[in-house]
Image 1 (cartoon, rainbow, N blue to C red):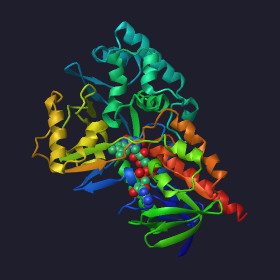
Image 2: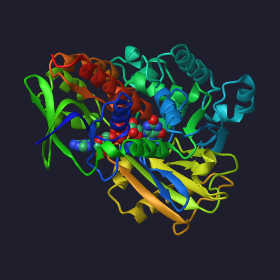
Image 3: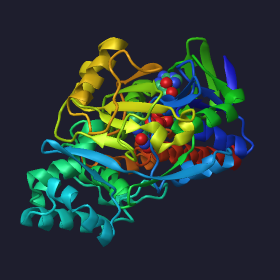
Image 4: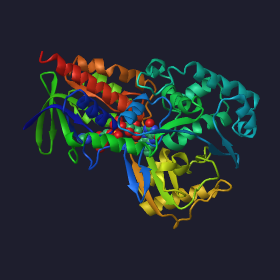
Length: 455
Ligand SMILES: Cc1cc2nc3c(=O)[nH]c(=O)nc-3n(C[C@H](O)[C@H](O)[C@H](O)COP(=O)(O)OP(=O)(O)OC[C@H]3O[C@@H](n4cnc5c(N)ncnc54)[C@H](O)[C@@H]3O)c2cc1C
């Protein structure tokens, strides 16, 4: 048996930001990560001068904790305004979500294709978007977001129904979410509208570290390397006398004054038998989509000039296409391209069971069926290299009321299991920023607890 003041279980963005914050407060934690590398769903990979993101790949304008950490870790941010091609009604239209009237007029053909110019489309589309504008202070992914306040029992599907959104506009609003998340309609209206709001209300502008999300997880993992033990799964968090007192690993028990549990929400109940019933119920509202991603290095840009990505919102088996070198030029050597194909929904669950070659063949084949005009999608055997990433738990979707239920959890724990803190994307607004800010919050809680001394 060994003793540590603070043990952190899980080295994704939540666990890493907790460790980093504790070290800034002069507290040396021990971070235990089950995989061979820390970073979780935010990991990146370097291949032949290319920088790849394995999971998360985009920040929006409200990722305040992510921006602060990038600055502290010396990662410059670059601004990008996304221009997407949409395959609608058998043809391609391109959009930038700039909300100006001039841009709207310039994009009239796209507005028609997306259903915004029919009387019903205009009525409901504008109502939904106007309401998102009005609620923009709630529909945010920032660390102080009040999204939980407007999270209720209504599903996103019922919300669209209530606003009589016609099918064509429904596809426009839900389609991109469906491509990467799975069916958004059973999920909570607040979280799904926040996903849409984050991209539409900010005119498609994003701020990113120049070599992608993976470069932030790499920098954080480097900063925490001395306190991290990888390949060390935690089997159990020990609770004794109403307090978390340590963790059990395959090498034995480690005693601790405080424990931060930073694993995905679905895995928490198995680690902590003594969770109060109300917390178990709140955690049962957490669920994740499945994700499958193929990244292909190319000696050319794969999409039409100026496009960052292509969306097939009406097709069920076609991935989202991104030209990552267009989005973040520093991710590829000069003149090279990086095609990123990402799919969620049930299709991802089917694909992740296949071998790498087959996953690539099926995803590329689906994209090539209706390739954007002027694109140069690779053939099956083309490309400098490729990678396949499989995620059984990708993005947190949540059932209606999840955010409101989870907002009660810190108080439930404080009253029943002392010295235990939960962190993870599901404890913030589910995203990289939510994970990072939940880790920082948990670390602040631990620092106050230790400063208060033994009771
Ligand atoms: C394909 C994909 C695309 C995404 N796109 C975006 C995006 O564009 N923007 C965005 O904001 N978010 C995106 N996300 C979501 C984002 O990646 C996550 O919300 C965030 O990274 C979650 O961080 P976390 O620390 O909460 O959890 P995780 O990253 O899952 O970290 C948990 C860690 O705990 C470890 N662990 C689990 N069990 C144990 C145990 N028993 N003992 C020790 N360690 C354990 C795991 O190995 C893991 O490293 C995406 C995710 C995926 C998969």
